[in-house]
Length: 94
Image 1 (cartoon, rainbow, N blue to C red):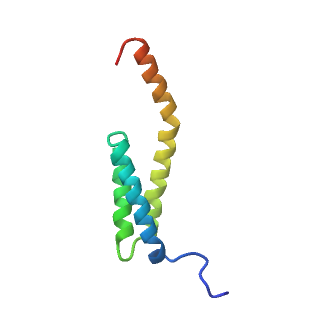
Image 2 (tube, rainbow, N blue to C red):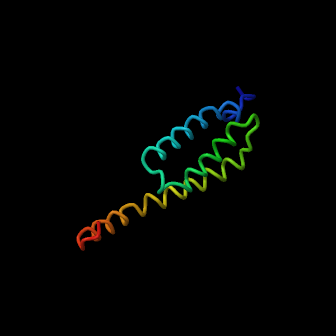
Image 3 (tube, one colour):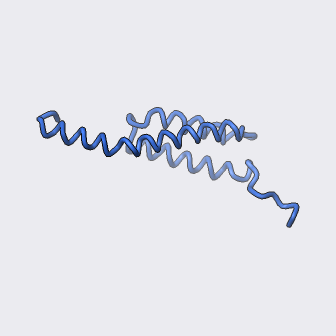
């Protein structure tokens, strides 16, 4: 037990990461193509790195940290954007 690694090795965890990134890319393509263009580019880069025989863990972490910040920003601004759209409709802007 003492010799067992504390977490999965990168090779063990990458297929799951690739699948999760592919699902995220599909969701963006289905629902948020233009709004999430930059996020999609980052996720595509992360997916390509994760698919490598020996992925660079530091690079993946940096890319996914940027994605996390973008999602947090997008989520925080979404209610503001909905408010702007409502006001625009009230004044006759479609």
